[in-house]
Length: 403
Image 1 (tube, rainbow, N blue to C red):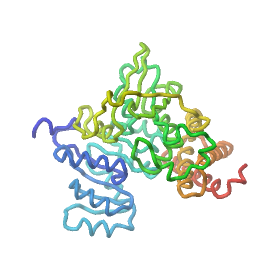
Image 2 (cartoon, rainbow, N blue to C red):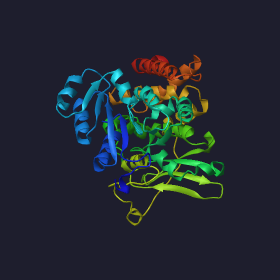
Image 3 (spheres, rainbow, N blue to C red):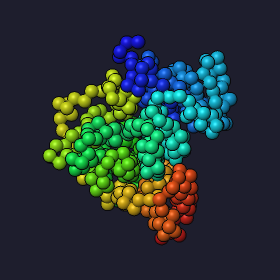
């Protein structure tokens, strides 16, 4: 085999399993895998319920196994894969079997709390976990990182901001770092007055100025909750204190993350806003692989601007930072409440500014009932997640009674 076809995980193609294959991360990943068939052996692709999209991807990538987490579309998947030699499976047991298959790299990209258990199960000695599921760190960060450490697995961050920081964070110089800075585009309403934001529609909020992402993360970007969740993630990924984490609004989305050192050096990772860059970094780490993204031309860009975040107009960021300081299960409750509130907004049941109001009310109520103590297991996290979702639904259905 040519030297360039070897990987750093081992000799020969990297065996890869993708959890959440048909989402936006999975689609960007599939593009890279299709362009590099000799470098990767796709062991298993897992999706929730989209049989057609999963079958198309499995055939395109010559996967060994395709799994639907839900059983109801099993027949459709089996029919599409008939005669291909690709195994079609579905249901919780099949999902567990897919996670257990021999793989060098597991990409955790299942959206939401549904990704917690399978991603935890994927952690094995010698494996790499390329993590794109926020909930693993936001909801169960201490548990997840402890399991990574004790198992001997390796964690690589897929999120563009965390991957950027990972690239310029000198681990052996961690005690020389003053600050870790995550950048934020500011979303589509960065300059809008708060009065105007009261009338924001889902259609307006789903138009992100720079990134092409899934619905929830796009709305979270518009409220800046996404940046708050990313700060919580960063607190588990990097050996720094909470007060060393900062957010900087950078509308051009050219600089994705920065690390400031004690000698005054400020190291940054720059690139076009394309998720294939951080995904490729995780696929081939510690080497680099060719990626067909638009090259950043600083002369054409001309100007980069920066500003401090406004937590008055974007209270979700402040709520998230408070949840980080509160600790315990507060971040898990925050995430659950946000997911339900965003869904309610997208469904036209609440307004844009009701999203932070709902989250704040739910966190206050859970705190008053002493429900935010630290979770001892993933099952505890899921139980708290369920409770927070129910409380948020109650707020959505009868919010006036909460005031």
